[in-house]
Image (cartoon, rainbow, N blue to C red):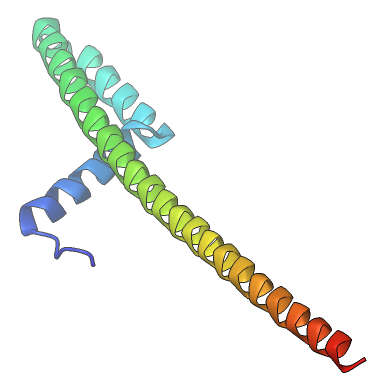
Amino acid sequence: MEEKEKPLEKLEKITLAFVSKIAGSWLGVILHAAWFAFWLIYKFDINILTLAVSLEAIFIGIFLLIASNKAEIARDRREAAAQKREKDIVDKILDLEEKNQHYQQQILKVLAEIEEKLENQK
């Protein structure tokens, strides 16, 4: 059963998806190129640009690591669920094989009794 998503978790999920989508696309490249060009054309303080770009890189890196960690956790959960389903299937197969062996033994016993009765009738 899935838990209900909390508002903060929903905001985190939306933010991570947005940052990952923009940062990892050509739109992100174009926006950054335009921003840098604007900054350089109008000769704003390059030190502030350097600080802003460094901070942005740090935060984008953190966002992408969080998104990667969440994807890994989701993958691990899917794998664990798949392994549990596989184990359940193997357990059912083993149970069926055990029952099959039991029924085979019962059939052989009945056949032996029938054969004995037929020999006694002769």
